[in-house]
Image 1 (tube, helix red, strand yellow):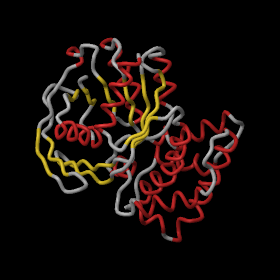
Image 2 (tube, rainbow, N blue to C red):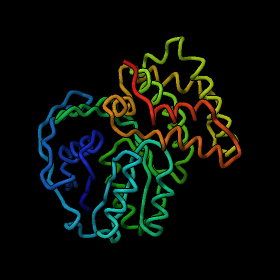
Image 3 (cartoon, rainbow, N blue to C red):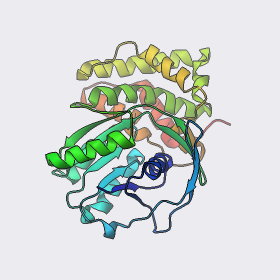
Image 4 (cartoon, rainbow, N blue to C red):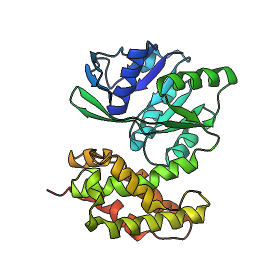
Length: 294
């Protein structure tokens, strides 16, 4: 089974490097057929320079595994573009935030699709891609393929994204990550700071208020894991202290952010429950329409 990676973003380039090093049959589908050369450095210091093999949409044969390591807002346009060329290829959506599952089901109701969240992190600057974080990838099938294909996919992912784990229900883990991202990402973007700077006293009242809103929504929805969000967020701030969040990078470079699928998703979910989340609402709108601090 050939692995096809959509795009040459930071995580897409990291996946391409892993395929390259492990000898997996793979290709990258870029905006055009000429792909960018990657100068990749892993978190343990391994360095390589390579140009991934290219594949076009028209070259898909139906037996590939398509991985979409995209921004959440890029998922639906990518699926709409791919739809005429899809037959039975399983898709893996790998991104921050929540909300794309419903978009995907509406567009491709019977297509085999898995969702994934990952603790892998990478920073891309030009052709240079540096792996900045390593950790587990968690996945779950939204719509399962046949059993043989499912076994092939899961074995491929086990080799490519080790350590990884497949779950019957990914929602508790998705919400755990969403709760943390909804604090760290917008605050670091607005204040133009690294994650670790959120540990300072000036941010604690706002962080606690955001966590309280998220916890109440999770409790109302019956999502486990709302306890001790303050501690969980603080732990990630400490563990990723030297990193710039992905939203910080997008916001400071004038790119679209995933805030609609993070804080915006929380606000919309709360509205469906008759709740309001004023702290998340304010961050959502400020990121959508604001500018980073100097």
